[in-house]
Length: 312
Ligand SMILES: Nc1ncnc2c1ncn2[C@@H]1O[C@H](COP(=O)(O)OP(=O)(O)OP(=O)(O)O)[C@@H](O)[C@H]1O
Image (cartoon, rainbow, N blue to C red; front, side, top):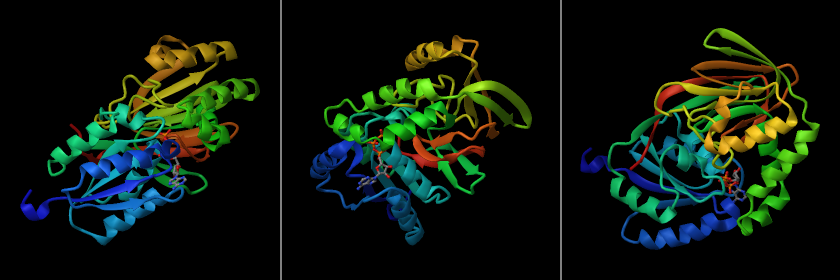
């Protein structure tokens, strides 16, 4: 890279992530950045992260380093904005409640440590990672980098994200309690249904399915190791299906996901794939990187080494 090719540094900040923690972190970070030129943009509502990133990428063909500051929802939006713009590289400062992106891509979870290595490595070659692309029957399209999933987990994630209680529980660092509440509540109402997957041309049918998760990296749900064998650089997804089990056993297996112990149960199936169609007999909710997007059916495909991240 020549001097002219040095990346322009741009921050996109979600000031609302983790109930304002993100904005407090940014105030600290900006003091550290006093000698470096940069531009900064703040999101105001859902999807601003993607729209701001896309506008910047389209406007400027100079190499850009866009640093997302916020939670998993923020990095999800920013990456959606820059996919297919190879002159844009991504960096990330974790300032949300879940931190699955930081865990899954081996980034420090401490924002101050993150800014130090971003400053140090901002003009070095980026590491290229896989992403997934999805298309639903309703016509929604987009990208994901952590995981996409349908069924019980997507319903919990939608209920939790929309919950008003999450805001004030986040302010006392107990935001995750909201999800535990909805797990127990929905457990009594949820009706598992038949899932048909077509994975790289091969059909697989699962009756009484609770959920399917298609993972690019290991973590989801704020630190649960749903896909211990997923690797975001291997050109494949790791698929996890949980089916045919009682509510009590689901709770037990659910807890074992925190250390990846769920794979030993016969009701949990796990294998790799690149191109997958997902159909449930009764439509169920779908999340992409923990954000509610639509309902089934939908189709996903791996995009190997399709975006660059500054990584230590
Ligand atoms: N200024 C804003 N005010 C309110 N919501 C915003 C604002 N900017 C962005 N958002 C929305 O906030 C939502 C949550 O953001 P994000 O996921 O980054 O934080 P979080 O929920 O605290 O963290 P995590 O997803 O890691 O648990 C996103 O869906 C995003 O679209």
